Image (cartoon, rainbow, N blue to C red):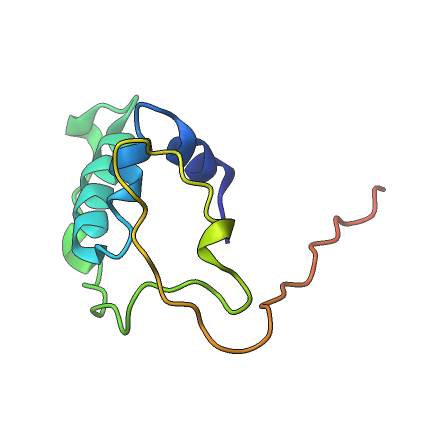
Length: 109
């Protein structure tokens, strides 16, 4: 899955290299997500009116395996935008190309 916001952040010259540095670096991605999510969650809010409930948020299980490309993809499918650093080489899952059924919008009423 690729969110449009992620696509845009990954290709902006101001953020592309930092975004690319998250590839195969789950601890860094989690640490930065926590920092950014905190800032976004209080954006436009009076922090004194909020209740901290972080103790009820479970700690995720550590990642299993290694970052990889889906079956049928190659490194040529990577849309690299960071000019300063080469994209990490990733293994490719074996098997036929992964397919996802298209999302059909609901009929208009």
